[in-house]
Amino acid sequence: MFQKLSSSRKLLLAISYDFVMTIFSFEIALLLRIGDLSLISLKNNLVYLTVVGCTQMLIFFSLGFYKGVWRYSSTYDLIRLIKGTALGCVTSLIILFMYNRLYDVPRTVFITDWLFLIVLLGGGRLGYRVFRDSVNFKNQSTTARKVLIIGAGSSGEQIFREIKNNPSLDLRVIGFIDDDPQLQNKTIHNCPILGKVEEIEEVTRQCEVDLIYIAIPSGTSEEINRIYEYTKSLNIPAKILPKFGDIINGNIKLSHFRNIEVQDILGRKEVKLDNSSIKSMLKDKTILITGAGGSIGSEIVRQVAIFSPSKLILVDSSEFNLYQLEKDLQSSFPNIKYSIHMLDIRNEAALKSVFTLKPDVIFHAAAYKHVPLVESNPYAGVQTNIRGTQILATLANKYNIKKFVLISSDKAVNPTNIMGATKRIAELICLNEQSKSETTKFVTVRFGNVLGSSGSVIPLFKKQIEQGGPITVTHPEIKRYFMSIPEASQLVLQAGSIGQGGEIFVLEMGEPIYILDIAKQMISLSGHTENEIQISFVGLRPGEKMYEELLLDGETTLQTTHPMVMMAKASKIPPVFEKKLASLLELGAEEEVSNFKIKIKDIISQYVPATLKDSVTVNSSVENNLH
Image (cartoon, rainbow, N blue to C red):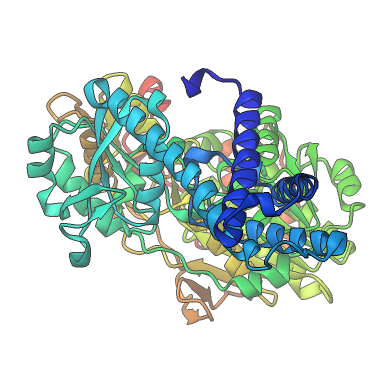
């Protein structure tokens, strides 16, 4: 019945109930204290009731009593009710004392009235919640899908309440799973803790579970992997709540849950940041981010926004990426100031106009990063990754930018491909500009592959699985370092805050992972077997290594103030670097690929371009689908 009422009618009913109970409470309190209401004149009684009723209602409105929803009433609402009714009683006492000094009413009436109000108003709200819960349970009990929540902490409890209070979801929580021994055989809102993680299979079978929600946003990858091992053979859909750092506003909702992804179970440690140093670098500062619409760039934007910069200057050449980024900012950070600039970082004149906005810190993430494409399009790679970095770094020095953070790659180490070589030259540009700078601190951050970035193995494998396979892996023994996009972005901020100028920081990437293992995990996560989705080995591409490195020959690492950020003892800038760099940048789009390789080799002695005999030739149709 109540579900069919409009919100305005529900509000009117709530106000009416409170007003009637306020009048009733005071009359009962009077009757109990004086025994006979006829001892008070009708006029005075009407004045008392009018003052008490109107005063209480005004205070209820001022305290926002009617902004809440009765069926969601909580301990906080009860405390607010106690405070509000107490304030109302005291205010009414003062007003009525000024009216006639309350010569015919004992002062203790207001204490009795306050206690009655707590019972009547609080009981009404509690009763309505019990009524709605019982109606919801009856509606859910026959048709609703049965949900098992793994994790009986605050996150699990929030999800339980959302499901319970929304019968339209057609879900019913049958219990929780949690490893905490103190919670065993206990209940949460009368919903039982059914056992520990190792008992999931038995519980799901006995209770005929339809859905599993993993509500452990602080869980490590090892813990999630352990839960996954117990659930993967059940043929029951399992969804996971992302980590707290990925939930921008901190409010946990059912809509936040998603399917388990391979990055959830790869075993990376949680990043713990030194927020104070990052805050001092970003708070109330103007931050310029290039490549802002890309995988890493957009995540850096989100991570920077958390630290309340005064303004974000967002640069990217992709119209669609900037459109998506703007929508994300408007949704997640509606109060942040930003400007969007759709331009190519090779356009020096356009960049100069951006620098007039006086950025304090620059994060340079714009780059071409796909090895095969840059290998066959060296001019574009050189102009964007090298010339674009040179323009930005030179302008940073000219405009006295406080800090310039270059996003580099492990492919810059002993490069065998043009993309990696261009990133190494970008590192050298920053070192060279640092030698000229009196104000700007140039910092380079070098790391490996990020999970789920555009063009990486995970979205490629996911698409190939959706198409029924095969999954294309270049070699059964190929390994790569991986970290998640949020993790990499957070550590970029951390390294940037540590840097004092001229450093090359190397992120702690853990152990390299076999690409083949990722393929197998993704097949399993998709609910398929390796018999259903084939894995095809197609050979290394030109310029591709079997494994990546994080340090150049002769480079060593030094510890920093953060355990996951190491500093490479940087090699020296090559002789006549600027002259050789200018010679490379003079090459036009019509030049042969070999000429680019010769010029790059002249700058970077460690560059050993792959030859055809070092790689397995693959046909172009397969090559277009490689990672």
